[in-house]
Structures are given as structure tokens and as C-alpha cells.
Image (cartoon, rainbow, N blue to C red):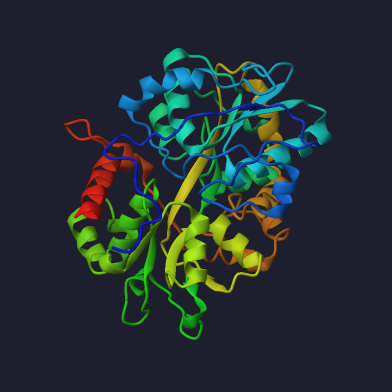
Length: 425
């Protein structure tokens, strides 16, 4: 196997990285701490100038492991010490949001919301690894130090969707056009809505510009497209690795589940000696630019951000690319009550806000509305998975990954265990 982007620190269900979050007082006109971007993304300079970010300790390693939750409780319970009390102080709404590009975009939009409404907002940063133990702690204690959570990882939400955690949504105040689009696409439910779809794009060397790759089979074809391939070393990149191997081997998207792991690893064996692993999406881009790989999958914020900055690479969205999804939900026991966060979601549903969010993050467009599309550059729409007429993406089946067998091992843990064994072999 090619040089790894970094050693995996997890095995089985021990997938929780370093913990830490902070309540961010809404001094969005001033500076802030900033020690590095989300490992899944690169930070656009516009956002970096507006809001520097706290360090992010890992990327897409956001899995909930019961054995790791209890040791993490003490660390999580101390969140909220940077400039504001854990109960949000005088804020009228406290919002939990992700790190990296997503966190920076939410900070920008929160500032715009405050200016428009006069409502004071504090934010709590939760990295991908923080969300799981934090939401489990809320589930266990019935207490939350925020009113609204944005970008809850798709594997975490179903595990913590139990009585007393999430409050019902009231969509009466949603923008009518935005609500209609959300409902038609099945993106809003009784107690949550989809707030982000992160698209794995394929980035390739421009030596293939005259005959670019078009399918996952091309990704695995070393004769047609020679050179090393980039795959993510851990996190939810591992299920993506497995699924694209099966798609490349001819499995139809509708037949992916239950995953045939023997078949997937047999396909991965065909390129095992030509794989370079990466931990952080910017590293995957740099590997292509430096010639260490000629093709990699990576995430849309990093890929599109690099292209906009002039990177000399090709980018494409393969059909049936596995999409990583995040959710927004109101907390039943937040410091200001669920009605507080509802104010922000009403504003969030506006097409102009959704267009701004897509523009700031380079995520896929979540609100499938003409009113959103017309506000965005048509070139960017080519990489959005669920735009009408180009529905290339297929969602990871989080329900499948969270199911457990008779030994109480989840399908996700089984995939990760097999991946670690395969890497070591």
C-alpha cells in the first residue's frame, strides 16, 4: 500500500478522538482563535478573515461508541468556558454548530441573522468527534446547553433520536417556497431537517484531461488511468471506500446493502499496492498537485475551494457518489427552550439564506429550489448531487450502519474492523 496520510488511531469501536468545544460569544466583528481548518475541508479566505476557527482534532471520525462515551463525559461537561457561560449567558438562542468550513459559514450567517432580527446568539462548536458523546450525554441527562444543533452527523442522529432529546419542528414560520421544496424532496421531518449534503468528488490529474474518468470503474482502472489512488484512511471515508469499490465492481446502488465486504475487499486488493491514504481533505488535493496520486476521492468543500483558487486539477462528480448527510434539530431541554431555536430555523429556510450557505461552504445544495439555483453560479451546480436533472448522488444508509448484530457489534464497526485488518495485512 502507498504511503499513508497518517496512522489510524482507532480500531473497532474506539473511534472517538480528542474532545473539546467552546461557547463562542458573538463578537463576530472582532478576531478569534484560529489554529487550523476542518480536516474535511479547506477554509475560504473570505471566511477565514471573518471568523478564525478553533482547532479541529479530527475529520469524519464521528462515531458513537458506548465504551468511549463514559470516559468522555467529564471532558464534555466542561464545555462552555471560553467567554460565556455554558447556559449561553444573556443569549436568546444558543446554537451548536460544526467546525471547519461549516462552522465558519454558520458564524457568518448567525451574524447576519443578528443584524436582521436583533436577536442575540451564542454558538457552541462541536467537531465531528464531539457530536456523538455530547448528544449521548444529553440523551442520558435530559439537559442541553444549546437550543438548536446544526450539522448533527447522519450516524449520530438516529442513535440519539429518543424521547426527550429533540423537540418537534413548527414549520408554520418557514419560508413557503423553501418549505415546499424541503417537503417535496423529503428533507424535513417531524423533529429534524436536512441541513447539509457533503459530496465526495473525484479529483484527477490534468494528464487525463483529454479522456477524463467518468465512473468508479475508471477509478479502479490502473491501465487506462495509471498512477496512485487516494482514499481516506479513517472515519466515514471507510464506508465510502467500501461502497465505491462495490460500485466499481458492478453492484447496482439499489443492491449495495447489506454490504458484501468480501467482494469489496477483493476489489480493493486490485489497487492495494497503488493506494495513498489521506486523513485530511487538503492533503488529498496536495497529493494530486504534487504527483503523488493521479486520482483521489475527496470532499466538495476542499475540491471546489481548490479549483476556485486556481488549482490545476480536474474535478468530476461520479454517478452514485455516496453522500454524507447532516441534520438540524431543536433540543427539548435547551437553556431557552425549543421555541428559541425555531426563530433561527424559520430564517434559515429562506432560499436566499440557503444560497448563501451553499456559496460559503461549497457543500451540495440542500434546498432544491429554483429560488436557490438562480442565486448561484451555474458552474457550481454541476457538482451539486441533487439538482433536478442530475441526481448523481446516493445517500449513505445510516440506518444500516447503526444496526447491530447478535454480538452487539454495529455494521459500521464491522466495516471498520475489516478495514483495519486489511490495511495491516
